[in-house]
Image (cartoon, rainbow, N blue to C red; front, side):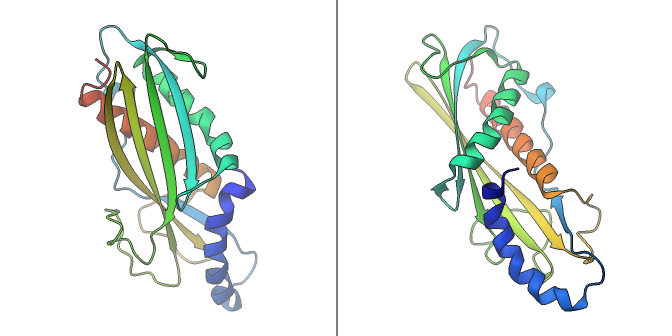
Amino acid sequence: MSMSFRITHAARLLALATMMIAGLSGCISMKSYVDPALPKAGKGDLVVAPEPKPVQVLFEFRSKGAANAAATSQIRPRVVAVAAESGLFKEIAAAGGAPSGGVLKVMIDNVAITDNAAAKGFGTGLTFGLVGSMVTDGYVCTMTYTRDGKATETTVKHALHSTIGNKAGPEGLTPMTPADAVNVIMDQLIWNGLKQLSTQGAFE
């Protein structure tokens, strides 16, 4: 995960680290936890059309609504890899291609939701009572598939919880490095988005 991709999350954690540093012993470390609310999805959950068509994949990552070119470049290969592995498409066409296929547009926005989860409509698997000990990032994936003038859209939401130092993390969740946790979240967002589009008959 690139430095520019982590900067928004790291900035929010800085205040938390400052408050906690007096009570910490040893090295300060950041641990991340993937929220359990979003169901896991995979290839077996998809509805594959009898004759899959080629697809052109367009991807953009945003931070609080603003385009993040570095993160887009970092994550795009994961998005394309999941699309290729899904079996939903005959092939992944190069930019400007897919004349007889469709266009899959994926936009993921990273938003802070620790203090305003309810207002943003995030149904996470955790409560937000751990003020001062944990921060939560939200990820909103908007996925649109267009072919022959017909567009089908779906939205998937996920969350990443992070702690600093020796503070205990959410009970029952496995601690991960921030980079590994973000990769898991990106994959789950894409798989769930493809699942939802496929069950809506978007690829038929």
